[in-house]
Length: 338
Image (spheres, rainbow, N blue to C red):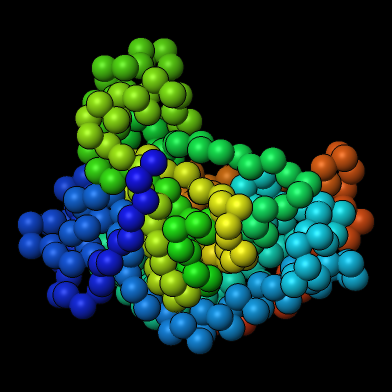
């Protein structure tokens, strides 16, 4: 599959993007136009590189905070399940209260990150997702590569753009490293695919669909081609949840420990009273959510279950370093009203 670099920047004057007719795309340019046209965009240097590397160090400190003395991030031979906290098959950490660690919330509140989503939605009154930390140790000897798992994170029953996902990039993502894979422009064809290639009996209201080989062949017949998003520490990667995407694992040549924070935001006024109550309960339990920030609010698994089916004895009920509960954070979390 083809892999090329995105070189979009955030130096242009922006205009709000549309969601079901709420805002106008007519005069959008720069990265916002990229998002509308291609279904994804990269904002270069959204966080200063030195601050991004400091967040990465905090992430590494967290990874090494469980007392696994054998874990050495300089020695790949120690990168095995028994030396690591519990994580998902795509190298994501959501339990142990990690999604509410102080460094995670500090990254979520970076000014340029919030400004980008404010421009997308046309409002700075936003809610944040309680999303995951990804630390991908390349070429681990105890796990098999996942391969491609192309999917979208929006139900075909939803018309238009409802969710924009984000990656706060804390590490180098070159051609051989782990990164986001996208099918540029596929967000404009997903509706047609569901309408012509899938009977309604296979549609779901769930905001997730994993595509089969024949679906990807259909996208290819429409000129779609996979692209790896290349990025540097401090870059913000954005994509429409209708864009076909997946997390690509490092190639055997990579020695880079991929480190990213998933962070998505949506207008607070899209949240129902019921969604806010659910979000508040999850926050108070230091829990995680999906990429959706205002709707689709339900708790993810809260216990850290090891690969042998037992609970990690080093599990935590709260963050190691709790965030500062400022008004800004509490509004993003849905605890305080705007």
